[in-house]
Image (cartoon, rainbow, N blue to C red; front, side, top):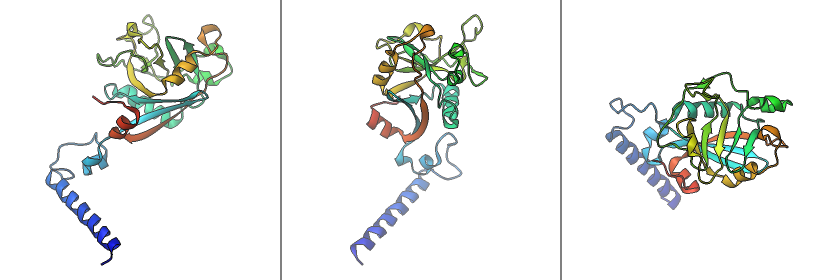
Length: 231
């Protein structure tokens, strides 16, 4: 038997042992605990670890990378759905305030009428999902919404979001707007966007378009690559 054949047999033996170990530990059998919320490969091979969705926002100023919180499941699922459908592509950061935040996600920002920016969406709102552990720190991703007079339940826009640019945070907004994510890379890009020249209604003089994509990555890899630590 040559060295290559021996290596293949060794790998096959290891795979057999791992399968047997998984079966004995309760993974992959009918008596195991419900795992409907776990990816199939995570249930069968738990040593690989669970995955999470990573959001990439590409602009002319660079890329912003986000993770969305499992503590706000409605907001997370909605944002990912829209991103995968291409809803955000071609929309702009239509409102920028230096040392405060940048706002985008309005489909109206695709048209030639700057006066209707900020008034659009997918046609629905999302119930507020306030969580005491999710606050307006620098880089927080939160949902825009209509004011309390029209929206006493503080329901979120179905698509418009903002990113906190202020390094000290904007905690006066806590429990008033749903925070549902965090920038894990690209705050330098957020700062560049916030500093751009603007006109009335804090609208940039030049459109700052975005393209939003989603990629699943193992949580361990996210922590290693971006330094983001899961609770």
